[in-house]
Length: 483
Image 1 (tube, rainbow, N blue to C red):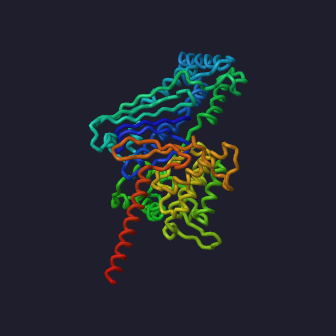
Image 2: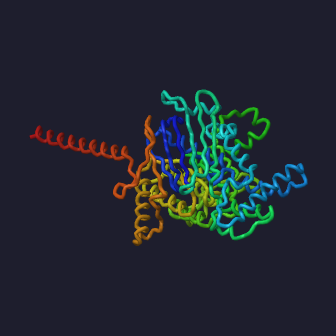
């Protein structure tokens, strides 16, 4: 799917138009809106169960099974109406040489999905949860703009075909007004699709078809957010879990008062504190976690449970060591990367969205370049990745990985590393204060180089040269005086 997100007057952002790529990079000064937009994308992804061809696509699958199973529990008229819709869908499905479109689904499916698209309450609640706000109006641009209307729009397409869109507008203290539309002419199955070779006669056949489609094109996708505070959370996890246990008692509830977390922090904490590896994890993604441990951590992240139902405790075991270290006793790099290892080892699956704030935090420049390789490996494994960063080393290495991809396109052998990125897989956007967000195109010579990074490097060089000249002039002056 091609994902286009357009925001206006959102938090500190004046305007931004973003195409979500397999690897999306947000760069720019602090307090310019990178985290705001990353959090919004997370909220949208959570709200729609991913950015698939249909929003909440599993509803279409469930509907066919519901009609078949509810024959004895529905009114005769409604049952006959539903089955007639199913027969009409079957007829269109079995018509050779004809695409099967969204319009060919029963009206009930159209009505339910489109009504959910315009559900103001659910989207508002998700925004307030993710940003830890009492009102979405707090998100309306707070940098002095004269235009006080906030706009959020999402467009999902596939090639030249628009699939669906969503828009939310808010002004003043009113709740957002949401609208959405699903393209009724959207093709769900082409005439040449392998599934069209089978004839479908019974409702159970259609249910089976859509269950299969659900695993292929409409599969629910998950999103995960690794916040900038992850290192501190890992180092203080023992204290946090102890507080959770204490808070679960009546005395604890009476005595402890705490601020609330944003939705992303709360979700991250829940995934760590209740860590459990998902079944069917990808071997490719597991391999990325293993490479991260071997190449950067030079050791492994292990899970210890004092009792089967106890909260997990995470420790670090250096290579060739019999002793383990608690996160609070490990280096900042270990506690920084441990959550990424854990998520890749047992949570993230192919097609999921992984958002990482500042993956370079607490890392040596050499390690930052290796993190870029990790990101490329995740893209190759089928994970959609979004990062915020301030690291020029990381950006330069991403540029080198794109150059590796360009060499592959030309049929040329690359370096001994198999890591690469295709130019079209990477989108980088630069954030400025009180200015629209702009895309940073890849340049074969410059790579991905924000202008302000070049300006800072030039200013540092000029300052260095000026100080050196003053030192030399002062030495020469002292020498003359001594003569």
